[in-house]
Amino acid sequence: MKNFLLLPIKMYWRIIPPSKRRKCIFRTSCSKYVYEKTTSDGFVSGLKALKYRFQNCRSGACIIENLTGETYIILPNQQILNESEISERLLKIKINHGKICHYPKSKPGVSV
Image (cartoon, rainbow, N blue to C red):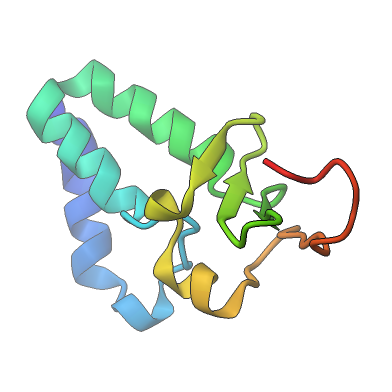
């Protein structure tokens, strides 16, 4: 059953060049994350990882920089991730597809 998930990922990696792939908001790309979870923990864990990433690596995430300068991202499921889990590309340019939003440091109630 693992191959049911792994084969499409391998085909995706071979057929679609990296420059044409949709950019992920996570530091570890969605396909790599699902591949690793499936190979290490099995088919069911891979399916859960796929569902989690598909639901959260789309529009609706908000990047927030708190008063101390730390950057966080709030996912559509309201989970908060710190800088170590955010794509380096997003940390550099602070924009992405979808509804990545930015709040000014001075806005009240934004500290995470």
